[in-house]
Every structure is written in C-alpha cells, then in structure tokens.
Length: 205
Image (cartoon, rainbow, N blue to C red; front, top):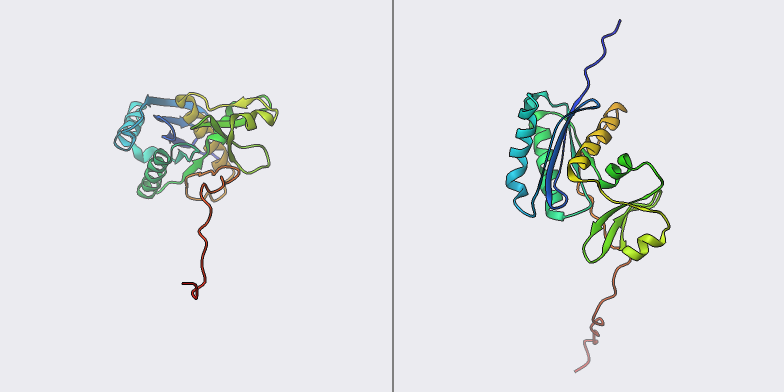
C-alpha cells in the first residue's frame, strides 16, 4: 500500500489593513493563529510574530511546506511589506509562496450569493464581481449591483481562509506564480481639474 503523503504545513500572513495577522495550518487542522491591530510598525513586527506562531505550535521554520500571503487590495505599504517578506522567506526556505487576494479569502468564507467587497477610503469599496475585473467604486455603485456585500472576516479568520485557499491550490499540483501586490484603480478615471495648456506654433511671437 502506498503511504499517504504528509499534509502540507502552510503559514499564512496578511498586513493589507491596520493589522498584522498570521495562521498556521497542517492540512485542514489549525495549529495556531495570532492577530494584532496596528496602524504602523508592521514591517518590524511581522517576522517576530511569524516566529511566535511557528514556535508556539512546537514547529520550526524548516517544517513549513508553503507560505500564503495576502496580496490585497488594501493599504499599499502594508501589502508590499507582506509580499516582499513572503518572497524573501520562500527563497531562503526553498518553498513556494502563494499570493491570495482578500477577495478569494472572502469567497472561501461566504456561503450565500454575494459580492466580495473590501473597504476603501472615502466611502468606497474594492469589489470583484464574478467574471469581471476587480474595481474601485463608490458604496452606492456597489449596492446597485444588487448582491449583498460580503466584507472581509476578522484578521485572524482572514488568514485562516488564506491558508485554506493556498492548500487547495497546492493540491492541484500546478506551478504558482510569485506573489505580487493586487493594485486596483478606480473604474473610471477622474477628469483633469485644469484644461490642457495650449501649445503655440514656433512662429508666434
């Protein structure tokens, strides 16, 4: 009888909003998770927090099978912190790093028909309608789509969902691209406030 391969151990983390969160899963089993609210200082806190999560579960960095990292949408600086950390750790540990959007994590936790939505500044939201490119829209525009908005779960639950999505992708056995930040622009570009300058021909005094 062929022995059953061991379940992958996946470390997931996210700093796309005002938090620093991580979760550790072995297969479907949650080994540890930790979340801290913070508006700044994520760059200094992330790796120590990850080490605490790993050591708290009685494991070491060398036990990890893969990383799952939140790629946004959200705070640009926070996303870059996580993504760059994931890339560096993946290279050092020789394991894959899998970028997981907040939209994918929301879909993992939501069961009823919904519109995955992530809060954005100025009463706007990032949305990802099925089959349509993600966009940044006003809250009214999001509600006009006609589906209940499904917002991100609490950070501690968000990273667990990210690890679960990463596990499903690993099971497919396909090559996964290196994680990259998910940047989303507004659906329609705002018009320029000032008219373009008039260019005069060279022979005009």
